[in-house]
Amino acid sequence: MFGMLLSAALLSLVDQAILSLAGGLDVPTGSAMALLGAPILIWLVQRTSLKDRVQPVRDMSSQGRSA
Image (cartoon, rainbow, N blue to C red; front, side, top):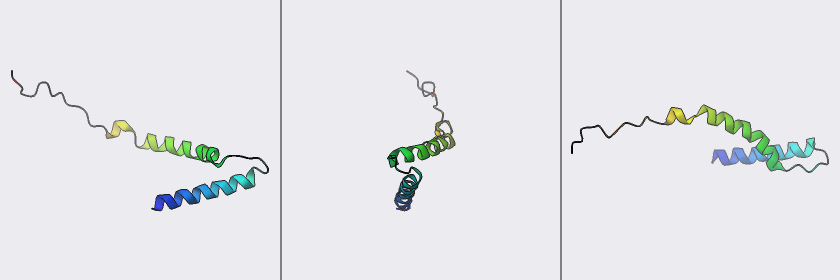
């Protein structure tokens, strides 16, 4: 629930900042959010990299199976 409220507040804040900074230009809020969100997403992906979370696969072919 907190994430939804934070996202709505951030979107509103960015929208108001774009309106005041852009003057008369029509800048889509989604583009501004993408410019803000892309570096954050890259930082999060690097922080929680997949190689730290994946367990090594054990070789199951040589574990006491006899034919």
